[in-house]
Image (tube, rainbow, N blue to C red; front, top):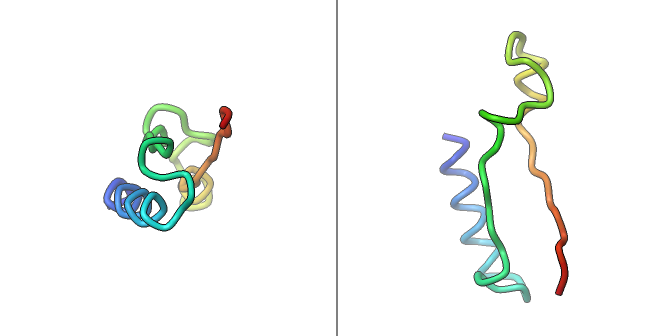
Length: 57
């Protein structure tokens, strides 16, 4: 479900942004790089996040 959201938001962002689809990439890392263990609802909430990394123009 969250993967679908990421794909949909990427499509929307790439279409509405000056960056365009060639410079906007998404990568799901919540399963492999959680910021907290997924043992409570609060920690699961912490792992539902979006991070942006600006690498250049």
